[in-house]
Image (tube, rainbow, N blue to C red; front, side, top):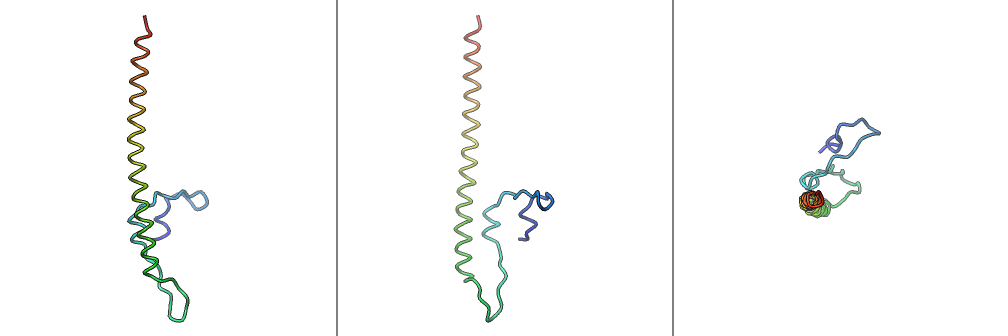
Length: 90
């Protein structure tokens, strides 16, 4: 994944981050540092990325479920308002 895939095409400075998907986190590759240099444990990084991906997947499911519930509540409110206004008219 390159830096460009994180953005929605808006020019630098005004860029908005696109929605991050679990697979983007899970599949992210890091540059391996050369011998004699300090670096991160690749296994630790991979475990962390999988944890983040699982959390993102959970959050995406929660957002979808809450969006559906919100739409259902809005429909119920509109139906109730319509029924109430019809009853109040002589």
